[in-house]
Image (cartoon, rainbow, N blue to C red):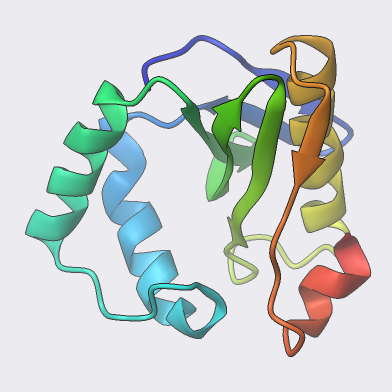
Length: 138
């Protein structure tokens, strides 16, 4: 969905995902696909198709995550209905920024946007039991 929500918390800034960064996201997600419900490899054409479909959705907000003005990942607030949304699809490229806690900063920033700017009153999330870094963050 095209949107203009953005926010900053400590070391990260969240901005709407633009086409400029979808290839970065595809490559990063393919390297960590075991952490996602759909764990197949994503082709360039499939990523472009996904992005075009995403732009048509009305309840799906994808954000680029930046630290030190460098694109380092993505996070989403999606499946929004009646004030309830799902938080997830968080992925950070730890090779670009080795500081710990970036996922937590991203989570706090996304939750602030959801609760204080987007009118969401409740967030849910799903995470694999084996995803220990995510459990520590959440």
